Image (cartoon, rainbow, N blue to C red; front, side):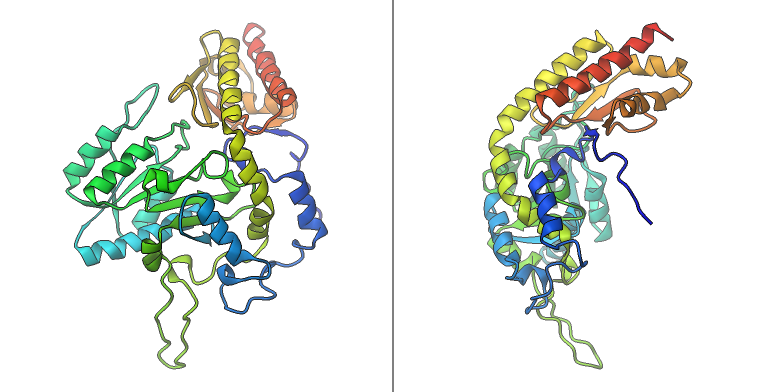
Length: 390
């Protein structure tokens, strides 16, 4: 049986995918060097019994480089960013019990759902400061401070560096100062930034950084990283202390918080092969922002007032969320209703808009060349003209 990727040669504009697209040479390496032949691709020469300690290929060295690149001291790879967040939440839940802190996490109202689920899994309660509402939906340091004071002393404060709904950048450096002042642990979820934009957890004064490799580090899913300080690593990456009752077995090299041993397959290899590319591309972040803001202006011009960016402006991240009454109006008359917009884009070999939605759209042009961006804008202009034809 053969399965073919039907969108292989399409322009991808899904904001979840743009930062995770593998460089062509890495795709070739994965095939040419045989990394796709077996599920446990890195584990042939494992001696220590944990993938993060493997030296052939140099996983252990790579994780040290990942930590340094993001301004941390220690890093472990995880089953996606949600598992990285679980590591933090589990660590904090235990810390809160020891220190008799409120088992409460203060997180932004635009956080990814996985932040809340990770907290729920370990018995932590989540509270949120309000955002500023339509059309910017920004979160302020003052709102965080008020919510923290309302709680008393929470076990953890979380900021989503760039949120998944509007692509707003949170004031993480100011929040880091606040948390340092209040002596509250601080986690930054950088799933949408670490690997596409410059990210340094020391400048943020963060205790934990969680990363999505398949969203922002040109890697295959599922893969994430949790990066932390030397001090917190002793808790977060503590080895197993259990001993089986009958056999007496011990698992001293395994880390319970990462489920013993993490990804040992091709996602990890893809991240290692893409790492130099990722380190180089973050230096072009300002160019990407200019391209993104130029695109916003031109798409809004096409809408003539009926396409409007939501979230902060100018953009400081590549994720774009538009309110699109123009396409909503067309959908009311079109036989395919809300599905027409994504389907019209697919006809033009552009993929990534959410099927069934036309009132709001999310997209990204991160990493696209000038010709591809012109193609996307031309497609929107052609589709907008349907308003006068229906």
